[in-house]
Length: 81
Image (cartoon, rainbow, N blue to C red; front, side):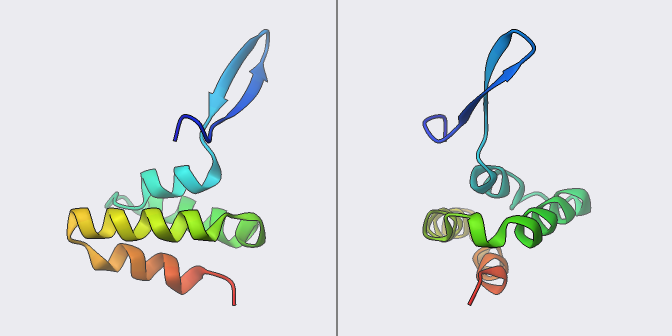
């Protein structure tokens, strides 16, 4: 995740910012409706630009490790055709 972060300048400081894919993966297991809304906004806005292979692979691993298959199903239901 750190290696995938992009460096952005904020004022005079360079900071690492999580990729959209990693932000989705971080928010995916959250029970908060705000996090789900954030994910849906990112998916709707940037669907064509996302690295879907990475996103689905991470989603599958997260889903399996947390024993929550609905997480991977959610991502698959939003991927482009």
